Length: 229
Ligand code: DC
Image (tube, rainbow, N blue to C red; front, side, top):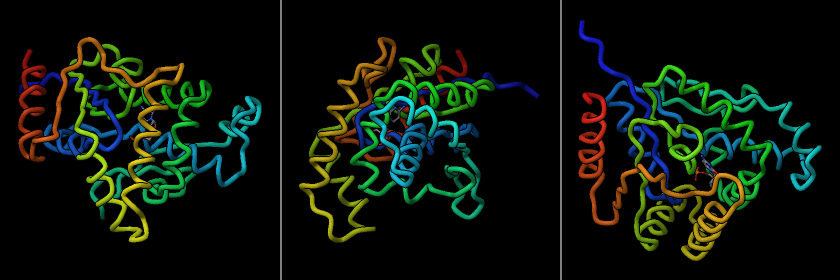
């Protein structure tokens, strides 16, 4: 049987522009593994908050990281791999706004990034992976065969995120969601280590005016071109 070439696909971009939706669809279609790198930073943040870790202190961070084991475990019910923190499924709790408010600060810490990036690179060893995040095409897999940089208008992103969070928490306001997105985008793109930026060889996908199907068709075409290169 013909062996298809396996590649690494990186999807970076601003918060809430649909990176994970696209990454999941691509992984499913290509029979690749999907890795949500943001979930790792969120799970670390959850651990820090629960254990009252003062992450401004380097020693406290180093010690805490020694007690963190992250794993992606496939859940047959939800048909997706979900993140486990020290054997606890935290896939859903990490989506809370409480985590979103702190995660950019935690993700800016050097030791935290080294901890997460080393594991992400191991997961990409066998290729056949779609990983989304902020520094995947620039730092984690600078040689990824296909790099997508996603973007969308601010108002579109705020609206999408609001709808998603409102379903779980009807008390949430549009203003809170907008403030959080703006704050995260600012911190993620201005931090010293691995700030969010488009890799020089990444292709921009602006989905402000695209349906999910349209954006999927575009990205799948790019992926197939790279696979058959
Ligand atoms: O993709 P997300 O919103 O779940 O990511 C949560 C936070 O983690 C985001 O604000 C920035 C950070 N992050 C990062 O710094 N690097 C990544 N590769 C992925 C996420």
